[in-house]
Length: 118
Image (cartoon, rainbow, N blue to C red; front, side):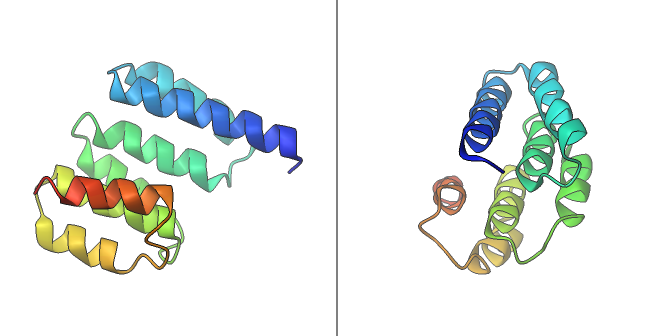
């Protein structure tokens, strides 16, 4: 993927995540759906779609989407930890977080911050 396209994808994902945080989940899902139409294997969009379910307590749907992804991917593991934090399952949250290899990545730091609230 060329640099400008990567930047565009990154910007769209950030907008969608912000939409999730401010309660505009349907708008966020439209962005993630558009990204997945463009590239059905786009992990970052699949993680984002899962997050759009987690923020509205649709844990089954979000967890199922995350389970379909590479279980060695740090971003996936971090979001699984976040999911378990939101479900108030500290044991499972720590299980996923402990499997993250790069604890300095933005997704791992987000998971770590979420774990701090348990």
